[in-house]
Length: 182
Image 1 (cartoon, helix red, strand yellow):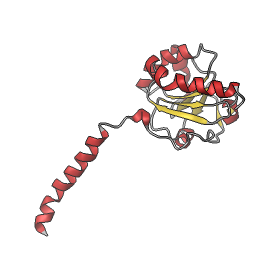
Image 2 (cartoon, one colour; image 1 turned 45 degrees about the vertical axis):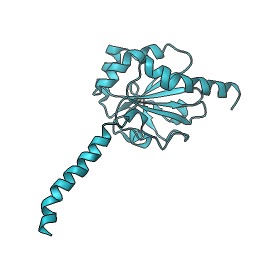
Image 3 (spheres, one colour; image 1 turned 90 degrees about the horizontal axis):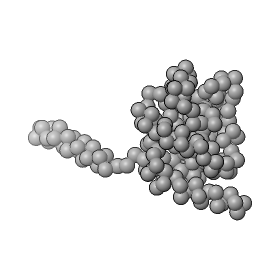
Image 4 (cartoon, one colour; image 1 turned 90 degrees about the vertical axis):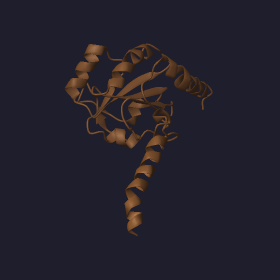
């Protein structure tokens, strides 16, 4: 028994090393979401720039929507921001923000300084909506179809390559479905 106890730390170390080694090969942007294929979770939160205006899932419905989770404390959000400004010029999608676990004044200043690509941003200071969406960290982006169904969750910053590979084909499919009245 005492011989086994001597080797216990070594066994634990090897097991922990195996788990951590496996983690090196995981792709966080491909983490599954239990909400894909389901409606956006119910919420009632204020708009970032207008605390008197309350937003609900109904404000996201009707078009192809990208819901981008962002925060001022997120360095990757700053990296993707110029590309989001370009995306906002497109008529194909509506881009909405979800300001996640942030301070309202800092977020408003951030958008003022860097430009505001969003139609509006939902202010989720406690992270409750983010938790309901299964957000791991910012940035994350959800594709929501014209019926209010989440069709994709992407973790990580968006740039031109990611857009072409991950988003453009899905957007095209949703547009075709909408044109057919599906």
